[in-house]
View 1 (cartoon, helix red, strand yellow):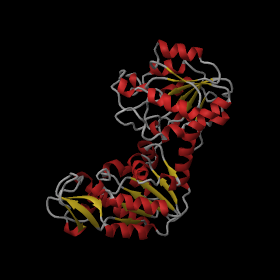
View 2 (spheres, one colour):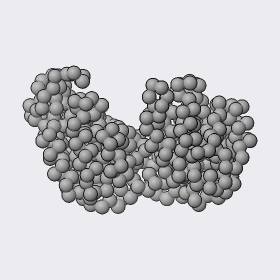
View 3 (cartoon, one colour):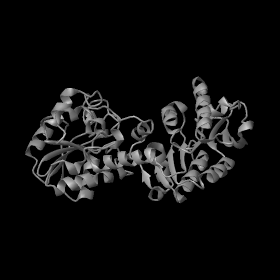
Length: 396
């Protein structure tokens, strides 16, 4: 997939709008706890500054209900950008109101301004044409560098692109890198290629699994979704999370894997608990011996050993979804062990954003992974073989 890249776009001395993804985690005191998404946008911002552009930055943060809410203000992000860029960041009081319009109109070359949270406008998530037009009217060039939100057809992501011709819109460096990396991963992987797929539900990963089957050599299943497959094979899984309406689909996937010669691995033991709680009574059991009324909340040590052996000879690893309820320490060991194997591997390792990226960072292994995507939902849609709404208008 070839994109209109920022370097092919004549932006010198122009006023540009860069759609970023600054949706970063914050603590209760408004302190940013992980600024990776802000740092990942810096190369595009620096390039535009080198080209003597006047820069209007836009992003959403959290899920405000289409109206201003101080809790979701981008003011802490403006402060962090100031620290990282070491230049003044002008902060607008609104998105397309008088403050933003006046500030954008007076913005000079080499200056940077940040609009207030785009989702303070109801029209952002509804892809409102009027909001798209108002944002576009502030600038001469549009740059999308927000991979993490490019699977959303929102006003600042998809709608706005209609107001710029191919010479005045482009993908930023981060968006290009993400699309290129996943393109290479799915079209020309170095083999053997293994996909570790976890998370709570099969329904969330169904299309990705179907699309991955013809491309991979091995699939390793973990997390709550494993129990739908185990039940499909006839195992009693107690009160474990099962999507009964997808058991037929699970059987189809396993049969297709067999036909394609793809090795399909499921847990052989689990950490089971009597209830979904951090203080619940728990014990280690094989998948044949999950007690009635109990639920599996993590993969067990035998599964960890098996998966380690399976991953020993692979050259490419894609990991999307944790192996258990990693947010609870008692049920995080399986995910943590797999994270260490993946990080220690000599293979090219790719982590598909979202919970898996959070998990890898929690155990301090983010520097050991070849590539960590900045978008959970966006990377999942790429794995499903879809063209993202925010990317389609930027394709050559």
